[in-house]
Length: 486
Image (cartoon, rainbow, N blue to C red; front, side, top):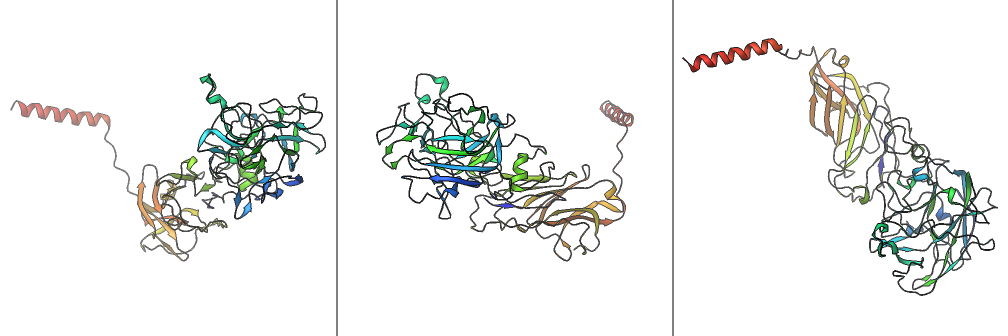
């Protein structure tokens, strides 16, 4: 994913998905232990499960990124992977659907069918201290067996078809083919790792849990298998009543040899679900802004605009709105897609400058003078067309006080070019005197100001009073009647 960072009189449009952006990020922080007997070759690096997930599509899992493993294989039912969060994951009813944690893996929809998934279920256990463990029982209501995690033994190497007792391999959701049409949209199996695909990264979607009880995906989730801490049970099968956990352990649940080999759960990442709070209403969860991209969740102008939209979020079809940043004064910039981006150059490092005053320099039109209205859309991404986007749509607001000393009917936008102000790349200028708004397209980011010709703004034409209007209408009618009978 590619992103661009702007300042818009204080607006920040930040870089996309930096998995190590801030120390208190929502991802698992360290590997405590790992054992992967009969694990898939090439996927035995446990640190692959740290940091943010990176998915591709519901039907195509992303097992490697830049030739490095994107998942870690646990191996058969005797293996395990234990991870630790530096900041505990809390049981918070304020989270979406009350779900507290998401486990990401490489499960996928077979042939794009959301009712048939290739899955390799894994047991999830959680612990406050890394010593006493509690089980997430899931839809099968599993319990510890003599203190050990349960194991489900399955045989056969082919397609699992409609057998509702099977869990590992290519599984067709039996709810979609039974005699009860009311449960067709319900998932039969849930509450385990490696059962739900992971979508491509976009915005804060990896912190928005998918509904584990429903088939398919919501529009604002990155997938993965979510669970509630309140589901956890102790060794006696009783509710654990845990307020939080710092340790999470995965074990392959199903003992099965398939045509592709030993069934082994794979783990990509684990995320702490934040509360569903978006203080500034910019569409991004507060904790995502604070702990992933580093913007201020209390300010609407601190906004991330993503230059690539995955297909599930609308894609980069020509004219699709990618994002709009608006500051408290009403200045705004809107970015539009111009089709699929083909460049291999990724925008990753961006600088911001917020001017304290109007940068010096004369306007290209000598009779024009700068007003006090200035907005900075500065970025190391200076050319939107080169970035395979449409020219940005910019809207600048001014007040009655800003008109003093100018003929406001002459107002035009100018862009600082390093030494002065020109209008290169500025097109489609529209001035609305009633709303005191100037709108235009700009190929480039940068510092913009409103310039005008010194003078006095002509007063608007005075409207006729209602009495005078009626007198004029009466005169016209009387004249018409007179002409008709002349």
